[in-house]
Length: 294
Image 1 (cartoon, helix red, strand yellow):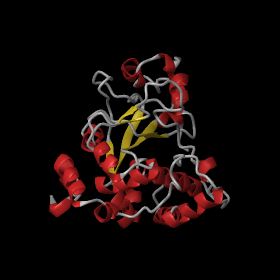
Image 2 (tube, one colour):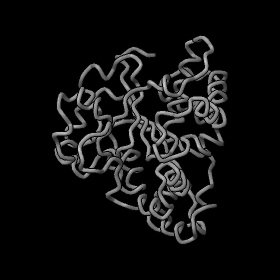
Image 3 (tube, one colour):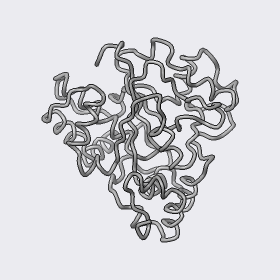
């Protein structure tokens, strides 16, 4: 791992867009670069890239408050202060997963994550039609509900007002709003990684990721890390574990398919038209086709 003075990074994404795969790849790349003994990757033990930015315990440690005492409107403006403590820069905690949009309606225009000391953002992007299918399996929701979720300006994770749980509310907004909140913000450098390119152009895409993060990018390391974290391999590792910690309680498994094009196969024409109509501008911006090429 790099020295703490080099700061930290965010791995931001709308849910079910490849964030966990990216983190597994980085874990394996760093292990290979360190020439550690060739031990089998343990998904539950080894993904120590850093706390998710919405972790209740991490926020309480950083801010010195009990988050359960605050409403969303009170907590969101404070969340950007998390990370001012030097503990954020501790070795082994450099890449922080984020599902929040960059700012929330209650954050008063401020980022809901700290920007102090942050070197940049990797934004992972996936075709919204495929996000719908993956989200449906992850949450055990009907496809129609997932379509509505991606189109909902108030969409959020952990949205309940009930206190407790290990994560605080994460405002997402519409899929397109989430994308532009990160890609168009000017406070942090951004590398956009399309899930489709992660699959189809693996060596090129992950080499660019390693260079952006200042990590070893020798072709033999990239190729080996990709081979060790291929979808089929991750499925085997999850099966061997019995249960992956990041799998939802209602889903059968976390690493389910990893394919592209499932949305076009499984969504109705009307559902695809709804997505293309509501999200089309940003879909076209990132070369995602909608129904009838919309």
